[in-house]
Length: 113
Image (cartoon, rainbow, N blue to C red; front, side, top):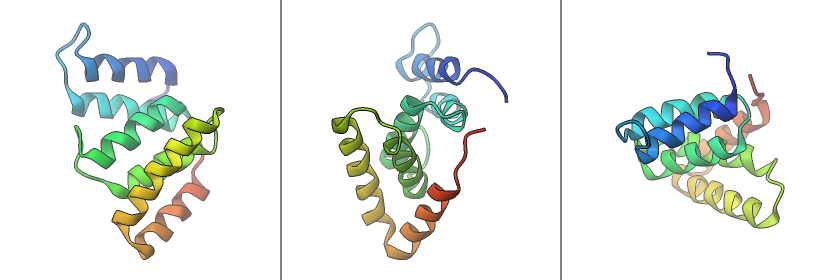
């Protein structure tokens, strides 16, 4: 789906918080994914967190690793970058070395839509 990544993230925020719609974490994750694919750093962070925590989606440490690493490469503030790298590191530990190496390859190959 083509569209405005910030608008898609905003829809994700609405579903996550239940603003003007019934709260629905799975629907929030769907919108965050669309926005993350469109290179929205805040959506990438939200999706990484949801995948790590299993909130609205099954636990997916590979996706958490990928989205937190992608967001970290463009985080303008050092504290935000450090937090994203910490999340990526948590996902990496949960993945194990072989799966983490595969996730790192996905990060290198990632391009926004």
